Each structure stands twice: as C-alpha cells, then as structure tokens.
Length: 69
Image (cartoon, rainbow, N blue to C red; front, side, top):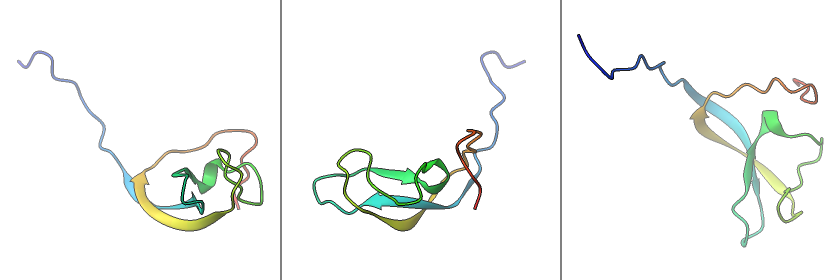
C-alpha cells in the first residue's frame, strides 16, 4: 500500500505554433489556437507579433470563438 500517491497522467508535449511579441520591452507570447483575431497583435502592448514554435504541453481550446484553420 502506498499512501499519498496520486495517479498522474502523462504530460503530452508537442511542437506548438506560437506568436511572440516583436517589442523588445514586452515578453508576451500566445498559442496560435488561442488567438482570436486573424492579425496577430500583442494584447499587452499592441505591437506586431511574429510566428514561432515551441515544445509545450498540449492544451486544447474548446472556445466557441476558436476556429481551426
């Protein structure tokens, strides 16, 4: 018997498309599947954002506003 042991699900990670703020004074980034506008504008400083990729934990967006492309 093991007390206090929790069954932990395996963390699934994959290469994820993200958008990174181009401003040197801002470190904001967001996942592509959480972007609400077609044009990528930083929600923190209103600068342009550029597309990059990063290995992240898989997070699904079930929002009605998200449209799979």
